[in-house]
Length: 607
Image (cartoon, rainbow, N blue to C red; front, side):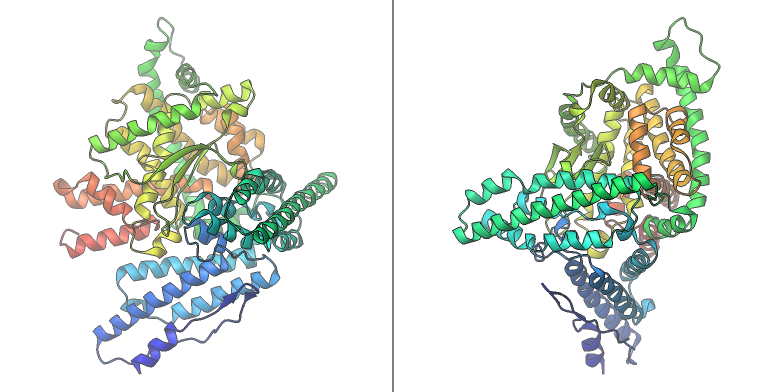
């Protein structure tokens, strides 16, 4: 009886071929009676682990581009055409696996399995919501871009060059069909998303340019292979140009008629998306109110520091009674110290080893010196969203490079560059590097790749990932980075205020209809941001939803968890131990990590 049950639950659920998805088995599984409770638990745990493996394997066949980004190259030759049949299969996949996992008794699982199950259920529910309710595939043309996986295949040395070129070649075969399906799917797009799609797909052509032609010409591929490669390369370029042309015509048409879709998604959709993406146990409205309160507290701290610094930078000048003016003047004075637009990237690179040395010296975390971090100019196909970002390898290719992308500031005119450089001055550049690199995103994602749970890694929670980077900023200064310089602390609070303002901005833009003019006032006047930074953040607020709230959400939860663990352990609390245990759980939501850490303490008699 038990053997039959396991056979039923572990049997393959689907087979995917190059032609497309096949039908799914939707039969529910009813657990049989077992002789003992221990047998039932062991059987359920095994069934869950095996079903999870099937689920992950299914994900990679459904989302081969995502798989490549995670370093899983077994499906790198595949590209799914985003047509109606594909969308239907995604929904069938979600429904089938919801049934399969629901057939298991979660009460019989270990806490690690239960928390994995919670992430899987959230993912499947979100997948259904995305394709039945949110439907961004209809109005966000930037969803469609083939370039990034091709770039990874070409530039990541996971296999010999000839093998990667053959994968690249095979993958190109369906690119024309991909973009044809994209054009059929798009219906009344939003203006910001349409503009981003044009920009990034024009940038995508670089991946299919002279560099790859030279690699093919100099390779050991057979001549007939090279001929097919060139044919497909030409067809790919034409498909991308055709998509860009389609988008530009659509843009001109909608500009004339004024019938763009509103990029604001409204309160209902925002709360639903917040629930799926953030997973912190409170509503978006509650987080928004918390951010408003925190903004007031940070303003008070900045005012105190400005009072302290005023005599140093403005001797014999009366301190303004207007708190906002006082803070602004001190920040402006400090912002004069910055790199040039030609040296900014080099200044970033120079600082990374200094951060690593401090982390090691203060015993804050163990750093893996074998994991390469490469600072580079943001590739064209990734531009248009942020000044800096991290592209980290996935759990299947842990030794690959992590890329720290820096916006090409040198390409800006002098006025724009000066505004941006004043924002990313000598003080805030340090906070930026802590956030993006060490011990922020780069460090956290290295730890995540060690997590024994592939589920907690690949179903990453944005609030955890962004929240850790924000937490790292505060933690480093608390540990003495910068020798408690009041200048650095003032700039930190300005940076932290940006995190808080992100939440306020995002909610007010998407839910309350905040105008661009009032958004600029919020950022420039209330958050002391430079014009160029505020303009870029406005663009982000129109292009994404909820993501900007993830920073403050995750940061608040991590700080609260640290204080809770510290209170429970008292004098036995060790900061490094807390950090390394926290990071060991991969990219799980903070509430799940909290449950896991408190369970461990209870098991050890410390809870």
